[in-house]
Length: 106
Image (cartoon, rainbow, N blue to C red; front, top):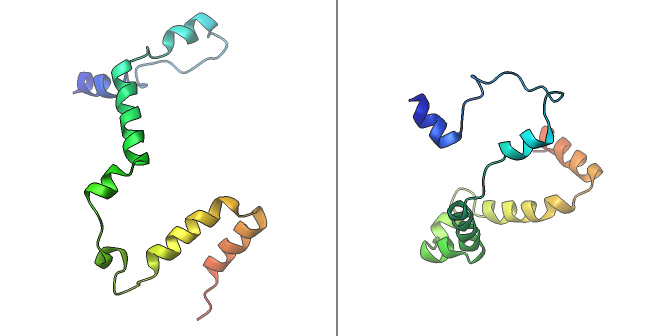
């Protein structure tokens, strides 16, 4: 089992001694890097392009019943709006928004 896990995830850190930066040299750091694997890189690029081209959204379209559930029809629209606004929000805006989550006005 250990060999299969090491093969998938790399060697276990349990067997290694604690990291000591004073003992590291530039040669050790360079040789410890993973070698370039063209197959892995091409798989990752393919996945990124599939998301950019929206292949899965075209292959598996969502119906209005899924995107607008009867219990809360505006949920996904509000979520999309929040995700678009979040990177533009200032520190003070984020702080106010978190306080709004603690206090419920109903």
